[in-house]
Image (cartoon, rainbow, N blue to C red; front, side, top):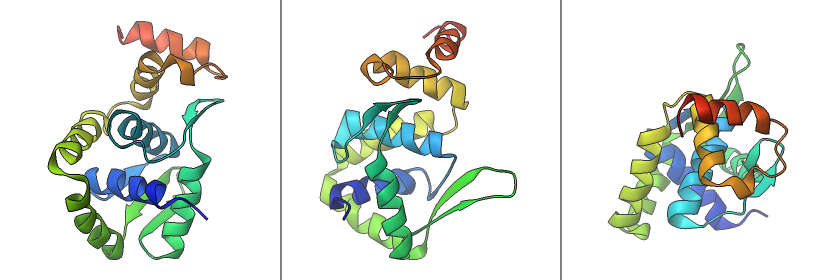
Length: 151
């Protein structure tokens, strides 16, 4: 059973992103930033590619079974996340639960980073939260990106 807070984080991130996100990496990193800086609803651990939450992916599976989101791989090999109408309704109800200030901060984070090139988003997260990069298999590559983007 997934913690309800983690499911709320999934719906909030997707809802604040306009109901749609591409790639597991983008989804994980945006959820991580919102979790760390605003809500603290899920557990993330240092992983092979920076912060990762198994719990988050279990929440995606449960929410898909509940009919609140669709998670699929397209023929081009890109994973995509969509909120369904049921998920969008839950998102609207949740907005009042968290308070305007927190929701606005989370929205600001997502709007600022949802369209970033993945290399920038990864570099930004590694630079801001180095403790989550300690197990990374791509640390050298990310160091190059950090220099490239002057982070």
